[in-house]
Image (cartoon, rainbow, N blue to C red):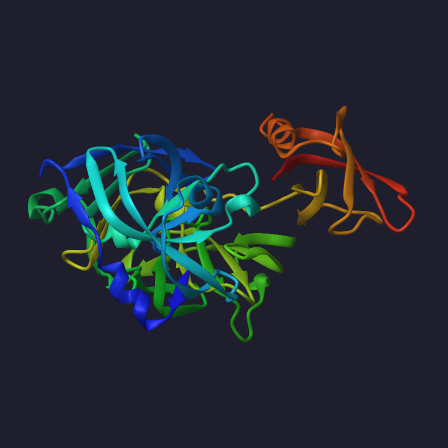
Length: 374
């Protein structure tokens, strides 16, 4: 996510921080590869995600609840390159672990598009950049250093990898991969993916050891879902600033920007140092690389489930993307609430039968899939 508007950048520097001065330990709740943290606003617990690719944001429902003072508006670009004007407000106080932030700013957005995640807001770079961060995905902990991390703590890490923050302090690095390179690759903690790459001229998935694809809504941005054909390939080597970081899965689309998400970073203990403008990586095991295969993806809108996407190895017969889902095994999927949809989709869903309401005459098509996800 990026911003357009000069006045807002001055607002990014607003806010004061109160803490003990020691390293702050924050518990992470990891769901669908997103990093959730508990945040207190006006004494109420809220559920935020950590996102180094965005500034602070809050959901419209929080703004309706608290009525924070409006400071202005700004054009906000999402992962699909779409721009929308959004207001930003002053948040008098928020607390995260032992850190209190006063008078920071946050953009007001609509998080209802992120079905089943329950996101109240984003801790973005106007808070993140005041600390050095160490992320331990295995123990589900984040450690925030108010002072620069000592050199002896970095000895077991790969690096330094030069980190180039933009105007909103989102960090970028140089990346090379099988087939090309990018001088400007976002370290994106708000991404559940691995390595995202913009499709280049002459790209062919046949040139990779393994490949697969997803057709339909391949991702979702702040302004809604993004429909595209995403091709997934096994990248036998990723390097940052000349440092070998091993293999990964790469997602290649026409609409992608270059980014590194939690699907890749979870293979490491990660240090992001805004003070030194550097990233450090410590491998914690062999990376698990799974390309999409024989998976049906469902979404929720207008009182029921719909066919969102499908992966390589599946045959939709006559069903189409956007068709309504009538039943999933014995579960009724129309005339249900979003909460009911999420409860169904959070169950183990393997070797399932799905009935699809085709249009225009609601003809029922039957599909079978080894797994169903949202």
